[in-house]
Length: 94
Image 1 (tube, helix red, strand yellow):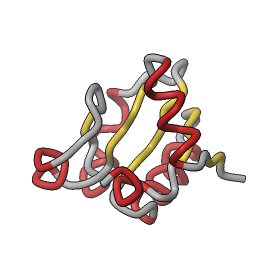
Image 2: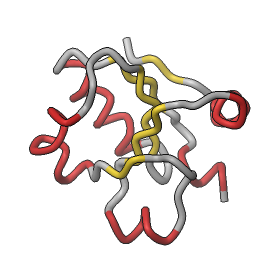
Image 3: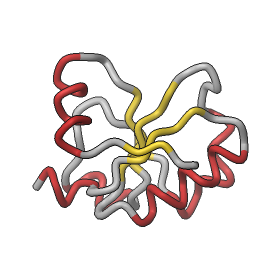
Image 4: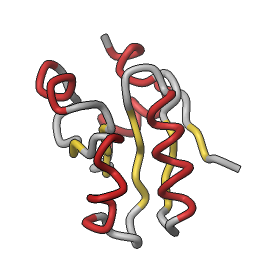
């Protein structure tokens, strides 16, 4: 079962706490607009880069609309990472 958090609740937490946010959009999308402090791990490269992540940290995974973040969460969960999907993604932020 994938853990999820609604964007409004995520954003409230994000403003209060130092969260580990993974943005799985492509580099160009990330550079155009992203949450301060988010780390860019494009889904297209995640299979090659995920080992840079820390298994002891929970990660909030975001993309544009929630589809890529759901795929990333599924992949990272299978690899033993603690991840929470932000389904509405950056569409909710804009």
